[in-house]
Image 1 (cartoon, rainbow, N blue to C red):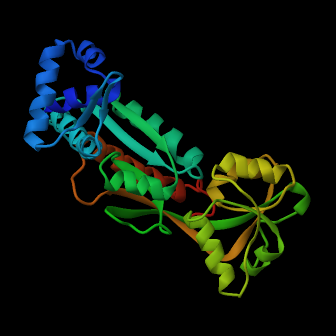
Image 2 (tube, helix red, strand yellow):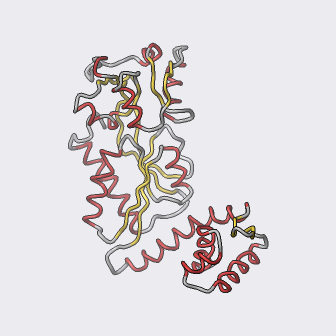
Length: 304
């Protein structure tokens, strides 16, 4: 399998038929057909089901596509790394970040990185920490911010910052950042939490279980804006990292209180089984330095 065959295979997957795939690749349909047949001969199994409506990947084809995505990214990164030895770095960095630290980290990081390396494209993915960890481990993204509540499976992680988890309520709740809330008090409140098995949900359930209690979950939502919208609508309380609600607190749209003994540690994850390319390595270094600087300068409040 060379890079050309991988591109041919991906094109047929994307377009679902030989005709459109051949046009996008600027090759003849018979040439593309021979290349696909050559790949199937190499793996000794059908990779597509041919029909009147086009070509659909078999289970073997889906498995090959999933595996080749990581390899194709590494080949492209290697190509740009070789060129970057004597020239300004080029290529692409795929970066993942959860919703809570997005406003604090993503925009200043991308702005600074673009100023330093204008020829490197940055692809940003916003997902949960667990999903981002899996994407890094599988080679589909280069670097991601995750948290210590997620097992570090297939990734190497470095601490970025540790901060308080907050009980977040409507303005009328009159919570105070100067007064802690015991974790067992959460059992008495109507809660708006993420769905299981999200690590935040499991952390709260585990903390309450230690006191023989269970959370009173009134609403489930998996996006931070929706959770805080429900709070501001006076429909309940939620639990979020301090960095996720800093702007709402500053605007007096919510009130919040640190939960006694409940913290979150943010990590920077990179693949354990492969090295980063030049572009991703520089992005990783800048991300780590930005986190340290924001904690040091007090921009990332309540973080250590």
